[in-house]
Image (cartoon, rainbow, N blue to C red; front, side):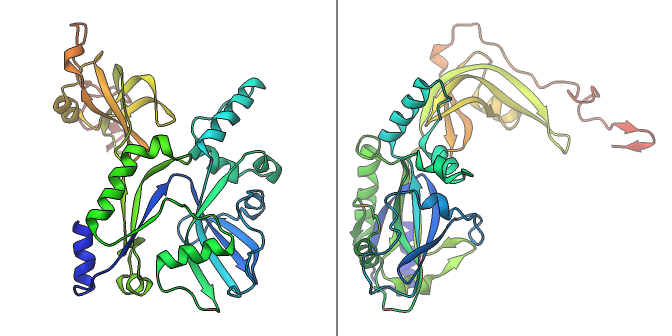
Length: 335
């Protein structure tokens, strides 16, 4: 709602439609076509420079090597998300296990790794797919004036566009779209998705709103709640940072969270441990913040049996054995 109000203010009160799209969890790529022929594909990289994966992208059956219409711009770039379908990923892992080969943890990382294979034949063995979600740029030809119309245009050219996107008129409609997929994404989607992206539909408005840093003012991402699991806090240990700070971390009973096996989680500092009321041996709720960094969310205090024990920060530095907080000498230099 705050984003919608900011956009409305920047547009001086003009009303605007929005397009709601699922935020697929794969690898972003850009596909370039010249005279309707696919000539180059690259990963997003740092937003300016990416990795050339043209040969590997050619093995994905849903990427057209030649566009269906001859009435296309002389040069065209589209953006999309390469993913590994969940149903096919399970079968792929079963086949690898049957051959005695190592299985993969999750579809997202497998899709990214597959596109970076040195041999395109290896990529071709993996049933990757793609959804195209926007036009990068076009040279020559008349382009649609609205993002929703652009998606339909790209679909007519032969690109695979998600059928689950919706054009809406109000922020309440966008929130309803989000709530629907929070409940149904896991069961109804064959592609992993970690949220919803809401975009201003009018492309002239998008250009007027512009970009701040790498963040477009005309779009907002609304992430799904992080997946949480319960596991055992086996120990709390410390390591020494490069500045000399002593940082505690949790040693966990291994648990699978959203396709990744988590064995450790940061605990930041002693105040964080006290604030969470963590004891070694506790049962704890763990999530991957931003789908990446494991963290301990809370403790399940009613599962304590009295065997748990308190944690104390070490009195001496684990690296140099000096008293913590005291200056250390190396020759005549105080560190």
